[in-house]
Amino acid sequence: MVLVGSGPCSLNAQVAQRAFGFTEQPSFTGLAGLGGVNITSVSDPLMFLSSPALLDSLDESTLSVHYLNFPGDIQFATAGYNFKAGKPVSAAIGMQFVNYGEFEGYDEVGFPLGTFHASEFALTAALAATRGVFRYGLNLKLMGSVLESYQAYAAAFDIGILYRHPLEDLALSIVAKQVGWVLSDYLEDARLRLPADLRVGIAYKAENMPMRFHLTARNLLYDTPLVSTNVLEPSVEGRFTDRVFRRLVFGAEIPIKESVELRLGYNYLLRQEFSGWNGRGLGGFSGGFLLRSRAFALSYALAGYRVAGTAHIVGIHTNLQSLRKF
Image (cartoon, rainbow, N blue to C red; front, side):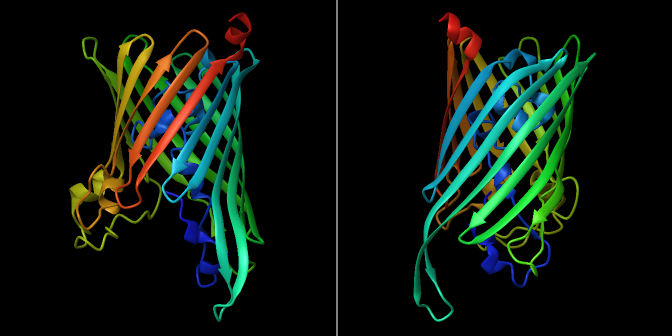
């Protein structure tokens, strides 16, 4: 989740404050519909933003544009283009841009200073290649954050490996994400750090099963808090099952026919952390669909956050080579 409060005013008393977490927001339909965290699905051309090993040669010459209307009128746009870099390498470029809108500014005594804007962006270049049953990928990212007159920038990379069983519909994946360096901080005495993460995932579809199951484990690197911050419930520190499930995200892809696919997801951590006084509602659940034609594909996803509201994501992608023949 993006934390708008991670701006410079909240950094004065912090040490190595995590920043640039907006890149982990599921801002395109393929990721959002599967629970918001996934490194094994190839049904969306933008999945290389989740793991570079998911950059698929079948998506070459594909242009994708997705739009997310996040609760609180936060606007999130994601776009990407996949192309062939030279046999046997596939490549892609991607852009993520989030506009937090307009804010009222005040000084220390409450005097109004007018309005200001806040926005963040990430530019990604991806490369991937296949050797046998393995696919290897690398993302290079430049990220920037502008909050009023304060700016911060960082460079990072993702490294991913995807294994596909030669006979079964089985995939295993591992990715190291957001490994890099902060190039400049909002304030000199308030250091930032990247939200680095290690993730592993598995996807499987039995021969006669109507759906493909996905399981992704995240936050495997370091001291990610697993104690509940929800004031509605007592601390769950020490509960082994809770600590495990807060790291897991479940997803399912249901192919209806060649041109139609449904997506479902469940994120236990979101469901726990976004509960309201009157219950959890759809918090942590997500879903969506993909409709394909010869020249275009239209997709939609809905993700429930309960207290914060519901996020709606729409996307379209087209193969430019097919479009020329359309």
